[in-house]
Length: 598
Image (cartoon, rainbow, N blue to C red; front, top):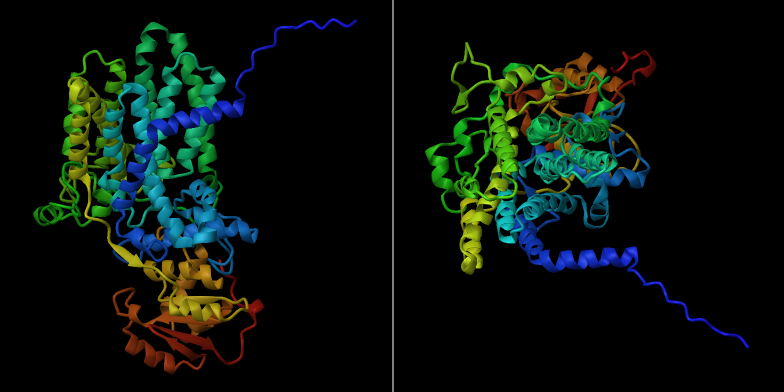
């Protein structure tokens, strides 16, 4: 007879996937309304783009916005073609074009590439602006929630950062600068890695590698700015610990520094690989001076504000508004001040760190020397500010717009505003929702723009004409060195895939394009025509509207047309307004005898 013994069964534990699903469910149950509100507000900020997201983009014309649409399109297309997303072999003919001569939020573009495959390049580009906007506010919200335990206060701070006019103004053409979401994530990760005593050194390194890589993959400006101010943040955060337990502070700081270094190198890798290329140039101090912030820009409301923007624009016009819109929000500033009224706040020293870093960032945003109304206060004998001396350092000397440091000030003011809102709400426990709704409304009224200007972007008739020719050849768009024409031609290449001389940044033009531009500017001189033909271009495509006599002493189109008619080496192939397509005729040069293209 067999006797069966009933052993106590081990208790079943939830599996790892079940734990993850439970965590996600709890997160969504608490945050779904905040996520939805932030997403809708992000759409409102770029209105009316959501009405036609596949054909319109933010902008007041065709410029950097078209350049970033092209970059988005090429990086999404390249993997399907077996090409590197960082190099376009069709541009900078007869070589290829390195896209890393300008900043690219490359990781986000690559991860969201399916949007471009199925929805088109313009939808992909607009989606990234929307994604970066609501993520920026949501990450600030999550950080504040972790330190204040006040959801309403966290919403107020997140809202202040989401609605900042700084990001709206840069949506007109700087996709990399719109990607502000990576900056609060970096500082949050840095703060966590420094302040949490229970973290193992391996986790500190891993955390900093991740957040720094995400920062570098979004914007090299933000990477450089955050590394400079992150060092200050780390020193200030560890300062109380240094006085009490020096070895403990060092034990935290070394892994954080190591992880940050590795993450920075990984994030900057596409750009570091170009350091031996002669394309990248350092900016002269006289050029960077022009981008110094005026202190009044911190308190000057957005010129496109829904209610009083037109009045602000009349009172104090800002011609450089895209780069110098840095309004901190009077509501956020008041709430930031109230943050220091919370005497029993659990993170009192962190509050001081935020204030100091915000203040230093504001000083750096003032640039090389003090400016008022975009004019140096002391033009000939300037009193140099810290940015002037930092600009002498390697890598930092490639920074052109010091005003962008102001976004770090905006970030920490928003964080302090969230703390101040949490304290204010705590004082009215019976009316928390009413006070919270009032604060959110005040922030929204203070910051909400009237919408953005838009332009319709579609392939031009000349692009469609080139697409009708399936064979592989090269063309040259003229006049050369016109940024708008160059970027439009790059965008058109997404449709017709023809080779052409091109540059990705006007200050970092490859030698090949400089060579093309030199001879294009001398056209229709006979020797210049011969040199252009030596580049093995099939067609020269001239934009008749751009020949207005304003650049490089180029003639008006009427004069140029007469000279072209007298040139026996070219003939008119077709006219597709406003373009004239010229072909070459007569004996073709022996390309082996032509001077080499640099």
